[in-house]
Length: 553
Image (cartoon, rainbow, N blue to C red; front, side, top):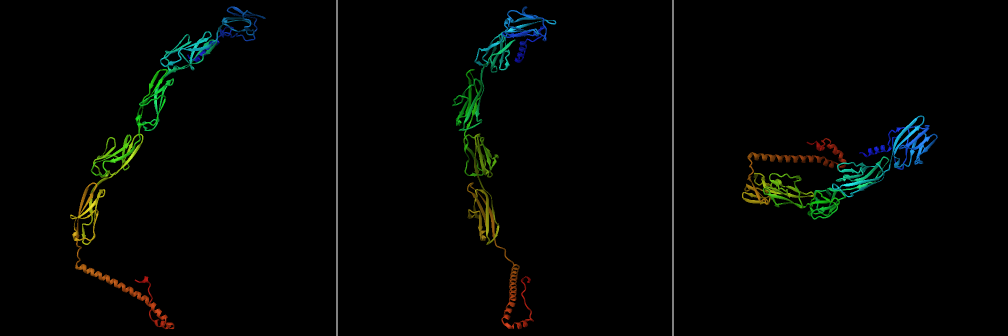
């Protein structure tokens, strides 16, 4: 039953309010021992009453006959009559006052009425006693007993603010004064109170705290920091927790590990401490324990000393070569790159299952380049580089130069080949060596004996391979000149000589004419007064002036 509803019902019961019999308002009144009660009539004062009689169990209490009233012994000082309405107050109540009360009134008309009075001892001294203070979940039962002073008592149990009602595990006996709970759970614990009521009063006991021990359960282990792998030399904190009442005690479980308490710190861990760790929770009241799921701690060292090594110091095209990527520390993966791009193995390039060995079978000159190997584990990564030079050749050997040359001319022949490292060259004329260690052969003045087969031999001292190329050169006489050719040459020479002589003559005559007026003027000026005669004499002669240079053709 809901507690609020129950209290409402009780309050109505306390008042005992319902329509009274006849002239009285109430047909039932409840009152506590030592208290007082008023029997109220329905008459509206002022009313002129000529006669009134109150009785208890047919015995007179008080009689009024105008103008006097008579009180029965035992009621003096305990009652008050309100003559204006006929109501009666009764004080200092005792259990003996319980019974039937009637009233007879004569006024303008006659009135009668009756009611019942019930006297109760009030509720007091409400207390709880318990049988089992230490309770273990699922294993224990407890009983609470409620006692109280008072009469006509009703008992109600409260856990916190909720009313406790009967169920499969909850029993209420002794008129509700005893509460028994079997196979207690953690949800049964709380602050229990006993509430006692009767029609005139109520009381509540002090709270009794019932604690139910349970657990441990949900035992878990947490690592801080949370990592899949821990670096050698780092610190790791382990924390164990469990749901338990009272709080659980913890013991740590692991290889070479001992300790207790909810927290454990591993300082400067090393790879030898790799393994499973767990903790055990123990409740010393329930005597139960639970072990957490194991947590795996993996300790790794950093990778260092990365290198790429070749099976040979001089890689030669066509041979097999292995590049091995190595490092100190635990290696999880490797990644190869060539010339800054991720390496994609071809048909003649393979990686072993661990990726540590890159094999070339056979080696090609296109395999030359900058190789790098990145070595990784969850802690760090390092990188090593290697420059692979593929020695090859000589190949594509050729000689550049003339196949025919005139005698007395300079002969230059150049030999070239693809080769790493660069090839050395040797020259043969027919079968005789004529030059070594040079790619260029030069003969400043050729003779007819220089005709023949010129052989250039290229040698790669790393690959130990050679190649040769032959060029046949013919030294020949320049072609002879015919009579017409000679006549043409003589005519051309004469023409050149004539032009040179004519030019010289023209230039000298021009210079002479430019100088004559200058000399004549000098001679005339030297005679003094004879200058006029000289002018007269020469007036009939033409005057020669030099022509401007830009007018001559």
